[in-house]
Every structure is written in C-alpha cells, then in structure tokens.
Length: 282
Image 1 (cartoon, rainbow, N blue to C red):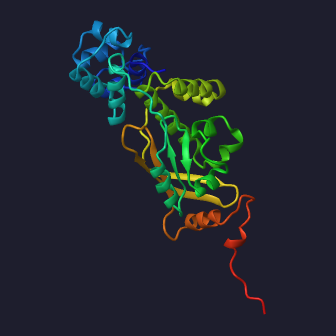
Image 2 (cartoon, rainbow, N blue to C red; image 1 turned 135 degrees about the vertical axis):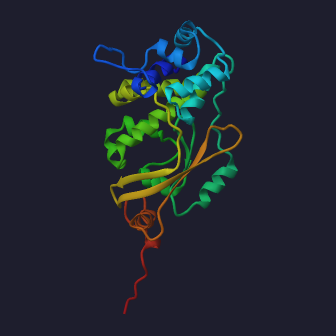
Image 3 (tube, rainbow, N blue to C red; image 1 turned 120 degrees about the vertical axis):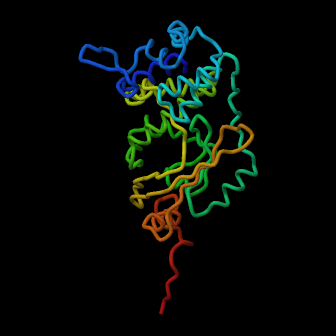
C-alpha cells in the first residue's frame, strides 16, 4: 500500500533547489531535487540513495534518516512516517482488533452536550453518542468517514470545508498505511476509494501524510444550519489505534444554540414531546 521509494520521490519533487543552494535555469527539467542532489546534501553515496528509492536498501541508520528528513524538509509527522516505512521489512505492526471496551462506551454516554465518537485507524466509527448520530444523520457504528466524504456525494454538503477534510482524510490514511501495511481491510478501503473518487486518486498520489489533530471542524447541517465546532482528539491507550473525538461549541455561540436544538430533535427531525417548552392553558 505504501513504500519508502514512493515517499522519497514525492518529497524530493517538492523541494525548491534554490532553497538548498542549488542554482537553477530554464534548462532544468526535473521538478524538485534530483536523486544525486539529495544524496550529496544528505552525505550518502548516490548509489545508496538510488537503492533506497528502489527499495533495495534495508535498515538505514537514524543518522541517514535524520539527514534525509533535513534535506527534504520533513515535519515531525513526515519524519515519523519515513522511519516507519524504512523499518517495515523488519517490524510489521499488527492491525488492532477494533473492539471497544464497555467502560469506553460508558464514558461516551456521559458526553451529553457535544457530538462524541470513537474511531479507529481506518476511520471506521466504532461507537458514537446520540448527538453524533444526529449530526451525521445516521446510526453508529457503521459509518466510515472516508467513504462518507469521498463516495457519498449526497452527503458532501454536510462538510463546510469539504476540500480541507479530504486532505486530512488522505493524510491520515497514508499514515495508517505506513503503520499497518499488512491490514487487508485498510488496503481494501484504499482501493475502494481510489476506484470511486478521482480526487482521492490525485491526493493519494501526492503521498502527503497528516496527523489527525485538534482544530476547527465546520458542518452545514440540513436542519440546524452552520455548526462551527472544535474537535479534540484523545488517543486511547494500549496501542488500540483508536481515538475518542469530541466536537464542542464555544459557550454562548450560535453553534451552541444549534447543538442544543439538534439535541432536542427526534428521529423525524421534530422536537420530541418531552423537549417542548411547557405551556400554561388558562
């Protein structure tokens, strides 16, 4: 699904030669750095670097990986991904089981005023609270957010920042593929997305990686309108590959009112009787 050679090629293609002291002119036909330039700047032989890109060199040292990361301008997430790819042949991480402990479900149920869900490395929603189900308009588990974003065109309008969401999804799946290269369900998902979405294919070819992090997450809900939420991700222990995601609203904001209204809706999109305000009859 993923390999060191492809990652190195895409990373060197994005480096501006002039930024690393290499003069350029109109005759240059290579996008980014040449392989021999990466080798020279990293302090390794050209032959060794070529073997790295061809997948024929195994177990590069930490010093070599550090030098490559520096020359290629890798951030912390990309540096970790590079090391996992370089170590793949020696150490294969087993895909987590995806079983959610009852205690976690109990914790999830305690989150009442914000959508909250538990998601695995494949972006499968393993559990979600009532408000999360109302936000996405479907029961949980059973939702895969990658399929939801890329393959279900009717649902695309839910994501106010759809293009940014697609970048996050592909970047996350790239990281997951590097960590669990022998996960058949993940490989199947990636193949399904590539077959069904041109945008996914184009983004996947870039080999960008992104760590899922906290930040703004905006939705355009068909019943309550724009919800500008803040997402916090809590990695669960025991190498489970799972995270607890909580989407909260700023106090006193229109989004807080929107979530309150959303929570008052029944399955048919109308407030339930118990949620209607009391009235006095004279």
